[in-house]
Amino acid sequence: MRRLLVAYDGSDNAKRALQYVVDLARDTGITLQVHVVNVQHEPIIYGEYVTSAMIDELNNGLMAKARSVLDEAAAVLQAGGLSCETHALLGNVAEQVNDAVKRLGCDTVVMGTRGLGSFTGMLMGSVANRVIHEVSVPVLLVK
Image (cartoon, rainbow, N blue to C red; front, top):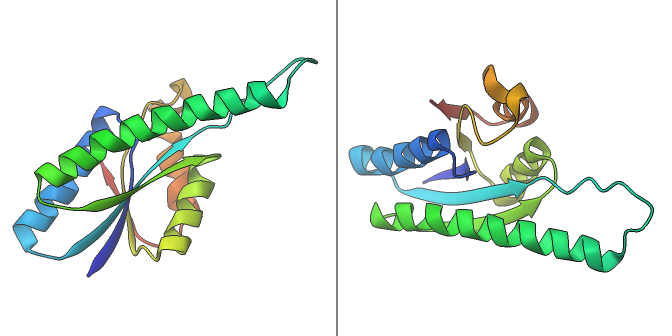
């Protein structure tokens, strides 16, 4: 059995990466254990008046967005005959993907080359580049 971690942000490339996983399972008959993660960047807050309630509200909003994106991914996988576990995380994407790989025992990371990041990610995808260098397992990038 292969344990795949799919880093999913809802972008077109991430959707193609997810479809690649569905096609891989269908075409090869390999049994896959799929973990889908969505990592939201923690908010950077400036100013003197910031309460813990404000931070909690921001984090709750980010986690709700992550769960919505993950529900979309889970529906695609289920339609393709695969089950999955979803994980909503906060923090640095590459670090959180690396931690999830270790914690979940995944042997491969699958992700799109360009996500919903900023302009700096337009070359290859700065997040994808950082994940490649951070994790110790093979990373499959899908355009």
